[in-house]
Structure formats: C-alpha cells, structure tokens
Length: 289
Ligand SMILES: [Zn+2]
Ligand SMILES: [Zn+2]
Image 1 (cartoon, protein in one colour):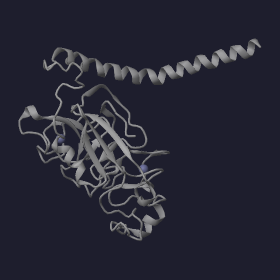
Image 2 (image 1 turned 45 degrees about the vertical axis):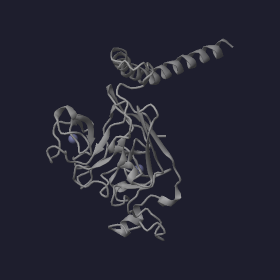
Image 3 (image 1 turned 30 degrees about the vertical axis):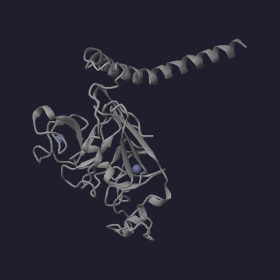
Image 4 (image 1 turned 135 degrees about the horizontal axis):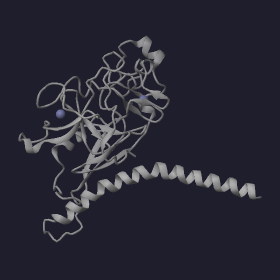
C-alpha cells in the first residue's frame, strides 16, 4: 500500500516535471511576446475612443500582398472586421501541374514526372484528389519578431499562394532524404498522410527568383531564393534565412522595409534541392489548423 502510493507520487511528480518542461518554455515565449504589445497599445491609443483595438494600425482593406493568395481558386484571404487580422483558408490543392494529380487527368493538371520510372518507385501513395482539407491560418496584420525563435512542428507550417501547405525539412521519421526527394514532383512536393505539401522550392511558384511563395504560420511572408532589392541571394540573413528589407509589395523607402523569409539558397543533399523552410519561426507561430 505504501509502496503503491510512493510509486504514484513519484509518477505524478515526474509527470508534473515533464509538463512543466514542455508547457513552461512555450508559455514563457507567449508572455514575453505579448508584453511589448500591450505596452505600446497603452502608450499610443490614437485617441479614437476605441480602447479595445486589437492592433496599433488597423487597415480598412486587405493589403495587396494578400490579394496574391486570392488569385488561386484554392485560397481565400479575408480581413477581420477590426482590420487587425487576416485569415487565410486553403483547400490544400495546388493551382499548378503535378505528377500527383490523378493520371486520368480529370483535373487537367496532371503531368508526367521527369523520370517516370524512378517516380513510380519512390512516389508517396495517394493522389491530390484523394484529400479534402480546409487549412486555416489567422495572422496579425503586423506580425512581430519573437524574443526567442521556436521550432517548427511536423505538418503544415505555412500556406503557399497556390493553395497547398508548406512543410519543414522533416518527414515523420526523420529529415527529408534523397529517397524521399526522388518521389517529389517538379515542385518539391508529394502527398503525405493527409495532404499534398511542399518541402522544396516549388518551381511553379518561384524558381531562383524573388517571387512571393507564401505565408508562414508566424505571419511573415516567404519569397524565392533571390532578394528583391539586390537580385542576389541575401547575405544578411538570420538562422531562418530571414531579414528586414524591401519586397515587391513594400514601398521603396528604407522605412518601408519589413521582416521576411527567403527560400534557402543552400543546396540540400548536394543536388538542385532548396529547402523552403529548414529553420525556426522567428515570430510567434499561430498554427495552421
Ligand atoms: Zn512530406
Ligand atoms: Zn529579402
């Protein structure tokens, strides 16, 4: 009886420790992020009498960059009523060709793989048509950098302008391997447990250029390998391949510079493979649900 209780106590103590270990760091992150928010709010309320504004500079119309998402029939971006948040909804299907569309080509978007024999050996099971998803991501109109970066989870970590989700550099069982890459379509993507998704530079959206690729769960946009300002691969980037600079959607003055990510220009596994997002979130992830 005593032994049983002791054991129980030990178990609950270690459970508590475990819980404290996991939850503690993330809730600390959230706290440190929200502190500067509330202090700037109270210091600069714009005097409109709307003391409940959820952000400092609400907007009255969807910023043009979000309209890029609405060019795909598979994505919708909507501004919240208070002008502080944008919700992006996507069905997970790309608006471009892929070898993962059903080969019967009812979609009109099926293309044969570059190396059909290898693809058929390595491809993931399932066609794009097999999955019905609704991915939702709500981001603040002015996302802020977090005090501490946070690791990306498995699954959707961002939404591309095509309508398909962005995944990190891992599969459920480890890093994306050469064998996995051999099963990708020409857009660095394959089908997964529940959705078609990108791991590498999606050539149909961006190929060695500065085009908008999508939005990450922390609200920051991601562009192709090249920087808009220099036309070169950016060299002033942080560990997540992000930096503050101008983009095709900002003004041209240095004050218009915003934080954004680029696809990694580093060759992955010694081939022409460029991981979309191998780093951590530098902002606060909002989650793609
Ligand atoms: Zn995958
Ligand atoms: Zn840039």
